[in-house]
Image (cartoon, rainbow, N blue to C red; front, top):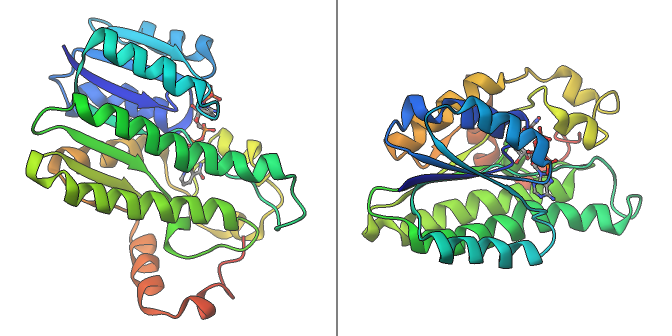
Length: 252
Ligand SMILES: NC(=O)c1ccc[n+]([C@@H]2O[C@H](COP(=O)([O-])OP(=O)(O)OC[C@H]3O[C@@H](n4cnc5c(N)ncnc54)[C@H](OP(=O)(O)O)[C@@H]3O)[C@@H](O)[C@H]2O)c1
C-alpha cells in the first residue's frame, strides 16, 4: 500500500502537512502518523476519510522507539512514497545556562531521530519516492542563544543534501524546508515567546502555506524550499558573509 510516514504529525506544521498530503500526493493510500500525543494523532486520523491510518505514539527521544518503528516496518512492509521528518524542538538559552537534558533533547530529536527514521524507512522506498526534512532559517548561520538548535538544523540541511545525492541513482529525492518563525506550540515550548526581540521583529510564515509549498517542492524534487523572499536573501547572505561576522547579528 502506498504510504506516507510523518513525524511530528500531532501539531503545528506537521499536522498541516498531513492535512494537505492528499492534494499533492493523491496516490497515498495509507498514513503513519508519529508523535507522543496519541489523542492528537487520533483526532487528525478521523479527518483523513477514505485513507488507512496508523497512529504511532512514539517518543523519538527514546531509542526504544526506533525498535518499535523497525518492528512495524518489518511487519507491514509498506511502500513508502513520502517520508516527512517534521518532529523537532528548539529551546532558547545560552550554553551552560540551560540544563543539559534540554540541550541534548534537541540533538536527540532533530538529529538522531531524523537520521534513524530516515535510515530505516529508505529501505522501503520505491523509485520516485520523496523525503521532506523540516529544517529552519536557523540552519543558515549559528544563532547565539539558540546555538544548539541552529546547529541541529545545519545538520538537517547538510544531511538532506547528502542523502539526496546518495539516492539519486534510486530516483528518490530529498527536500529540505527552511521556514522562518511560525506561530506554533514550538515558540511556547522553547521558551521563546516574549523572550526574544528578534522573534518579535522577524516576519512570520504561515504554516498552512509553508505546508503547501513544502509538499509541492517535494513533488517537484526540489532540493531546498525557503518560504519568503527575505529568507531566500538571508540564505544567500549567510553563504557569502564570514560566519564570524554573521553571528554578531543573528542572536535570538
Ligand atoms: N515554529 C517555528 O517558528 C519553526 C520555525 C522553523 C522551523 N520549525 C521546525 O518545524 C518543525 C515543526 O515544529 P512546529 O513549529 O510545528 O512545532 P510544534 O507544533 O511544537 O510541533 C512539534 C512536533 O514534534 C513532535 N515532537 C516533539 N517532541 C517529540 C518527541 N520526543 N517524540 C516524537 N515527537 C515529538 C510534537 O508532537 P508531540 O508533542 O505529540 O510528541 C509535534 O507534533 C520542527 O522541526 C521545527 O524545528 C519551526
